[in-house]
Length: 264
Length: 235
Image 1 (cartoon, rainbow over the protein chains, first blue to last red):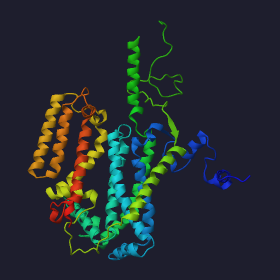
Image 2 (image 1 turned 45 degrees about the vertical axis):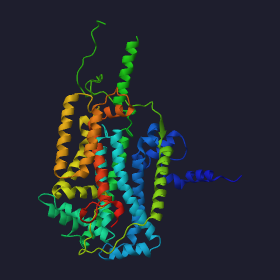
Image 3 (image 1 turned 90 degrees about the vertical axis):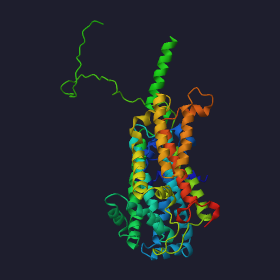
Image 4 (image 1 turned 180 degrees about the vertical axis):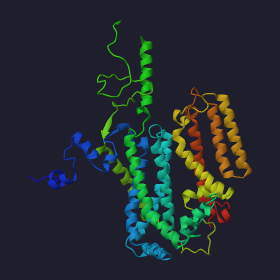
């Protein structure tokens, strides 16, 4: 009898090569499934179990998950875009035009990157407000909220630095308007403005700086903080649920004890 | 029970010196009791599968948007030709709207700086943790404080003619007054809901309201010289 695809896959997972890559081994027991999370360098950021009630759509609207999804899409589209782009003025504009009209699927790549970037900014804000209204910033999750605020700022900076890269009128003047605000910082505004742009106005130096920030420095910082953000969810006792809080449990236990006493 | 105890209470962490020890769990140091009876599912595969579905749905939606709508691309950057109006990215248009009313050091540095600081400190204030209805306790004193803050803020916005921020403030103030007149015994569910809202809820909702209104105005209602235009007037 011919083997099913599933059986072939089981055979594959039993091979020496597969076993050498994935340490947890095969099988679908609870232990093996827990090990699949715990023994994986990326997945071990998450806990091996999640409370069922928090999987319902209404609990989180999956906003954090989808924010991470936009980040993945942005990395996946951003790297091919880098292959067709020179961060120099005015070549950057010509490259963007080529992406629109010459490069195969270049228009689609750029569109997807652009709309995903806007979506990510929106989702980060939505995630923040959802977490706030759920009260999920409460002890012991205070610092994960702070990391979230840092990630909000990194997201805004990522979007802002990417905004300049097409080097068209829209990009140039948006960055001019935004960077002029830096000059208003009391005392050292002009120095900050100069440091940001590599000059007194948006020019080729600013384009190069924004390119390095956008493609290298800020994504690395974002990944670092995203890793801490995910890891802290596990360390802080999983996703917040009011009904699972120690204080709520204690209160309900006490009220239960009081009720039992009164019943006697 | 009058037998003398065969141990003495003391503090010692050296297991070699005093091998028999007893643990006293005093108040405020007891271990947190966690819910271990709640239903749980394995992260692999159930949760990862759901996360993958959520990301897939999002990706499909974004691919459709990318196929149907082109990203904007204008002419080559020209420092000698300023478009009117020159607009920042949409998520900064709330700030740019504020820049229209206040000097850059206020609208561009102080306001965003204070917003970031305020966001960071939210979980560190007890008033945000306890989350009791704002007007449920100490009602008269809190009403006076509310009137003082709301009127001072409204006069400030009126003085600088920031009508775009004044209108949401007045609407929020009216809703808060309704909340002050409500109680957990109110007849409608909506008023019971309002009565239970804590201070942090009101501040954050006011901030969200202002953010949406100011960003919306900056995006859709501002034309040449940052003058008011209707979206259908075009440019």
